[in-house]
Image (cartoon, rainbow, N blue to C red; front, side):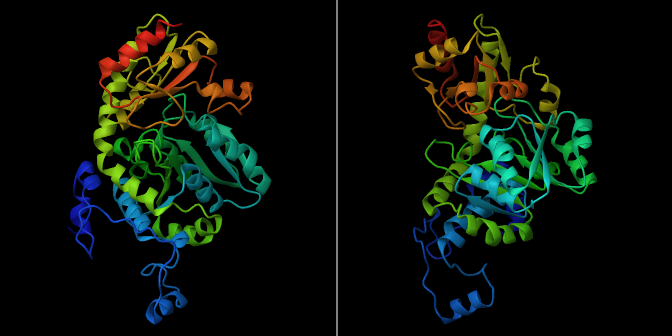
Length: 394
């Protein structure tokens, strides 16, 4: 199948189809479990001449399994090319450090994933880079923060963990009006639900560990965007920082891509039903889910998302009650991470955001008693039954 024929396919068909391996014609993509590659005179000469695309040198610099994953990601994200990395944070840090220099600043949403927030707030200043935290729903506040040293506007499609949506297209128009690079973390949506490059993002980053992998058994990250820039980023940052993905992890992510649509669609269906159940539960004080009319970004969600996602948060009376509820779950899992086939939950204030000071957490909208839910693909009646018996314990 030609590239043009591939591009005409619907999303799920693109995700499932792999062109057969040219050597073996195998349907499943092989794993090239090697750290290095044997050269011959011709191979060696290509390396000397600077041809790093048609030959493989060393797996930290590129591997056939990794490259296959990158081509699949680019196809699904609608980007020119992609880089894959050892984790989502490797993707974020590699990309940011490939753009900024000492004296620059970036603008990021006030509520970002905890480790991203700490990278912006604590690590980047050591390299002379400031981060200005704003509310990306307020485009005037964003624009007022821009100055001559601003290089990047950074946002999450759906903010972790408060489930706030970003006006992706409008924010991108603002970034480009000022000549800035626009980066969107699409982890909570996945390319199944949203492809920010189609809405104006310059680069998309994702923790592939989540919905792309989908089975809580692999770490990985992706950067999708301009091919020329990503070529330079591979050689100037990724290979030097060493955040390369392993061939086996790349293969697991390739496999995960093939079932992503089925998993995400089912999880979204479960999430909507679970959110409606939670909204009517007497022990739940508040529910945040874009599919509910009570969500402040419900209209935006209807505009940009074909489904409302599988991430929910809800609040019970206090953190102690929340932990008791989580500890009483039997089918669902009290655990970190998200995007897997099994429903898992955590109290973000004292788990993922534990190292963020309480005052700052409150400014982000992350409170004690909040529980984040990543809905899986179990039968929804069993999920609700598990929640009900756990609520009985608090």
